[in-house]
Image (cartoon, rainbow, N blue to C red; front, top):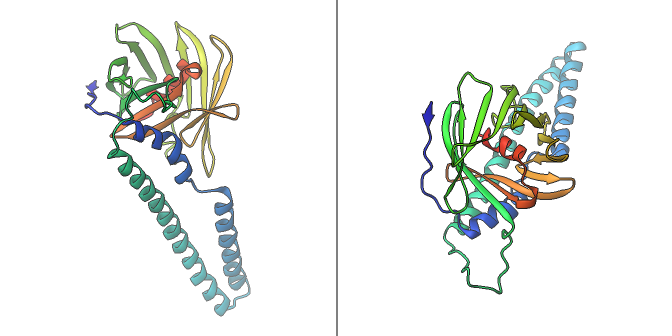
Length: 265
């Protein structure tokens, strides 16, 4: 079992605000409308090619072949440029925030939007690693254990008391857009199942449904690294400084969310 140490790092107030509020607005996934338009163009091109081949018309067939090649190349280039554009906007926003000093804690006229939030961080990791989860002060909140061939993840607090276990019921498919996160998880607290986590496939933005049964029924949906309860945004998960961050309202924090978070590489 490899141990992954947490390098010293400070998330500034402005970086946190950029990650929580700004990035979701400037980094957009591929929309269903855009995908549908591209598929329609592709089908029409295939239709021209099929018509030319069926009627043995070499001119139409040649047009269909060139059009198909063109639409495929255009799609690859367009989607790559779109991804690069959003990555550039993201890096630019974070670079601007990186150079800004923290808001002074003595500035009483400036409200803290994260006053009632919980911030947890863990390093990027692989199955089989032992790694810590720290809070916004850098103190260790949890230790996470896993084994390469085991379907179980174990989470303990700083005093070595078990907090929860996560059982992987179904691994991520190789073509999954979920970043390697298992598609089905069960979260156990004190030996009893407390939640079921299921990721549902989507061509645009896969959604992970978290159904909690204990200590009281709750449901969350995690989409595009945003955590919703009902239609209300209650938290965000973001990646920065070779780490994953869970930023969530304290009242909305549930051990099932922690269970999902620790499996994210």
